[in-house]
Amino acid sequence: MKITTFSIRVWRALSMITVLGASLYSYSLFGQDVGVHFNAQGLADEFMLKSDIFYVVVGLILVNNVLLLSVGRSLLKIQSELLPIPNQQIWANHRDELKEHIQNWIYSLVAMINTSIALTIFVLATVNNEFKFKIGDFGGLLYMIVGFLLIIIIALPVRLMMKPSSDD
Image (cartoon, rainbow, N blue to C red; front, side, top):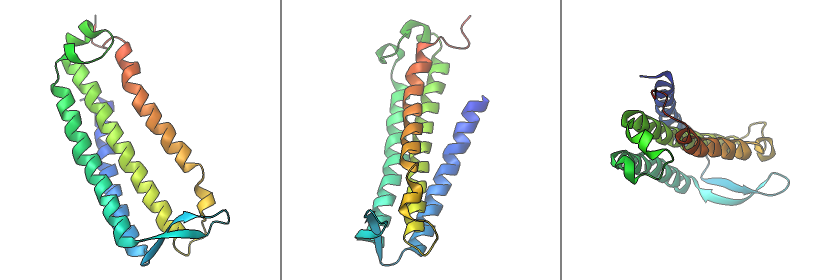
């Protein structure tokens, strides 16, 4: 197993543990009403019940870790000739490497979404409790998450434009 494949699998496993832990931890910290929208001064002006937030988060986790992974597994079963990839004939001769790249990409996407959900839950729990942080302290988090997601989404097409590493 390559180090990248191992690293991505470890990241995915840790992200699943983290998102579940963050969900349970934040549920214990939340009051009955949780601020979900904040005005310019950083004060909550819209609220949701903590149980509603918990169910939404659990739904997102299930969709991400079950539905997205099952779509990814189905994608791995498609014949190479039917995939819209450049250098199709070259990649068809290196099917195992192609499957590894696609699987790593799917696992990275799932891990990044899990990580994003966990970070969002931690921020929500932090700003809704008597901690020293305000919502404005986390302004760059959205840009960081979007940046990482774009990098992951673009990584597979860029890699498939190159030749397989096992190509002679």
